[in-house]
Image 1: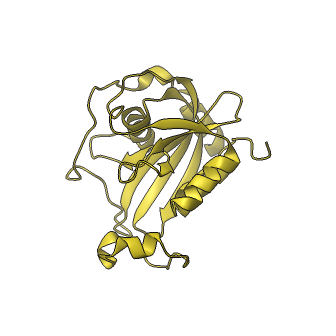
Image 2: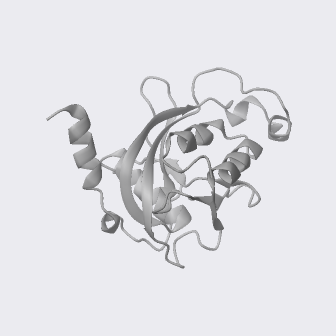
Length: 194
C-alpha cells in the first residue's frame, strides 16, 4: 500500500465522534510543541466546509471580534498527532464537529514575531508586504466536513462563528492580514467560483 493510500485510510478513520467535547478550553503555552528545526510554534487547525462545499465556517478572532479567521491553536505535548490537536482546537474555538477528509499540508506563518515591533497597529494598518524571516508558526491544516454545530462549546461566549463563501472568506482573511490562513483556504475543496 502506497504512502498516499495509507494517509487517506488514516484520515478516513478520524471520525466526528473522536473529539472529546470538553466544557473549557486548554490555556497557556507551557505544554506546546515547537519545531526543532526553526523554533516555530506548531499549530494545527481545520478549514470547516459545508457538505455541499459552498461555504466555510469562520470564527471571530479572540483579539478582535470584527476579524474572521479559522479555528486553530498550539499542538500540545500530550497529543499523539496533529489531527487530534486540530480537532480539539476546532471544537474549543468553533464548536464544530465533523469528519477530517483531507490534509491540507504545512503552511509557515511568515508574519514578523510580535516582539519585533511593539507597535503592532503599524503592521496591521500598513499596506506593506510581509517580510521574510524564520517562520513564527508552522500550521498543519486539515479539511473537516461539518456534521454538527452544537450551541454550547468552550468558547461560545468569547467568539462568534459564521458561514462564508470562498470570496467572502478570502476578503476577511485579506482584511485580517492572514496570508497563511488564505493559503489553507485555497488548498481546501470549498467551491471557489460561486
